[in-house]
Length: 200
Image 1 (tube, helix red, strand yellow):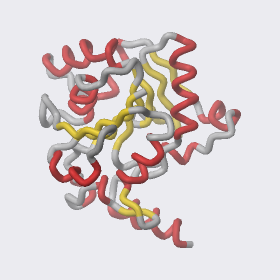
Image 2 (cartoon, helix red, strand yellow; image 1 turned 30 degrees about the horizontal axis):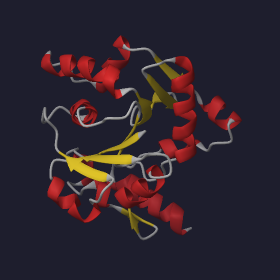
Image 3 (tube, rainbow, N blue to C red; image 1 turned 180 degrees about the vertical axis):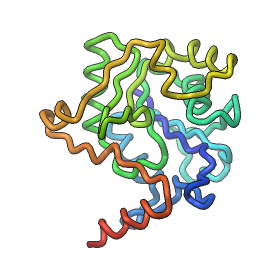
């Protein structure tokens, strides 16, 4: 399985600050994510507008590439990542999820392989968490490319044309997996609340 970190957003709700470089417990979000994803992924791909900013992270198992279709949100990131993935499966996350869960990814992978789905996605708080999902890149790349070419940029619209399974909170609880992995940090207020929680 390849791990994909989408770090190409505009960060407008974070006053332009790159969310991948926010810190928690003395560690950058992206560093935390890499550490967790390496538990289950043999290769990591970071999708970023400014790949050179991630040079300090690059080594034999990590590459950083920009969007091919620029300016069209996460769907562009999926396209760039899946264009570079050689493995059958990909765990895709947003760079603003500091509490990723390798056990959650492993469980999604098991459901994906068993059910022959194109994607397995957590549903937490009634929301589809597509940026902590496991996907089949080779199956999905043609569809994603077509959607970009026809200007259908909404990420959730991808679900209309694929076979996918959503995992509700009850199923996560039955597996003993805390759904905090699906908590992202979109705003400066959320970031401040996260730090206060960690320091309390």
